[in-house]
Image 1 (tube, helix red, strand yellow):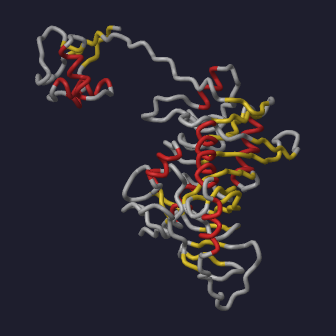
Image 2: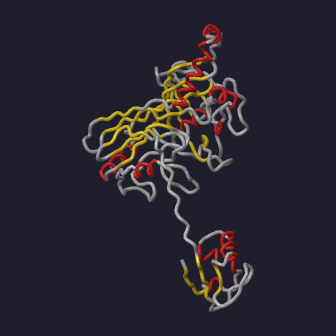
Image 3: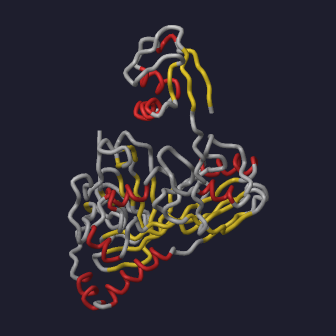
Length: 373
């Protein structure tokens, strides 16, 4: 592709490589490559990278169009439910919800469009049809809207917390309670652009959990329901009380345990979605199953504790009761709450946030809720 462009007044007197970079919106090193290869030059004058543009000169480009690379597709992404309004997929780990700067892997939207699935045009550019997302490293159910009506209604349901989202997570250590709630605001961590933490300046976040299975002091399998949908919410909340998700190296997981379980990502799966259908208004439930890597890790954990059930039982009975009577409050059965101050309150009293079993806390992750100014 050849074209001639008069030198912009703002670039007169600038180095030629700087001018080319500005004119084409590319990096200076890429501009230098174009100049060296003769694809960017000044008409009727020999120039180098360091030459300066003169008034009235014309820059000539002879660019070779690069063939666009096809977007990777998630062929193993199963469609669990689909009708004219919505599609619910079982997103594999390693698949992003949508394209973003720097991401070169498969996406949910790209994979659906590759299969000929119509997606509404409602939504931000590049995120059409998406009303709720999952992290790249989290697997499970994700809903995408096909019709305009569905996008409007499902966005409202998610915003007003009418959708019930259930996750299963394997967390390190033994949770003291069988049922509890974490209420602590979440915001971006100062130490990293990619990490989040409990901070007074964050947005309100509420996480409910119920214990499904215990593995001594080593780990606990929990069912988690979210009232809010903050980025990394489950991972941050459990890490903040000293129980990071198994395999979650970003938030303080024990690498020795992760390796023993064969985990290279957080043990977290979006198991169930419950919502009112946007058109029929029928209450709809969609369920998933554990993917192979999480199932293997859970089997490995069960095998570790099947070998010594008696020892685990003795260890549990030897635990001291550290609870104390709450002061000036009446506990409500089944309503334990972990607040940003790092205590669990409820019928059994108040006790310090539990420590991680079998892991040293990393410098960036405190075993108690982290409060960052």
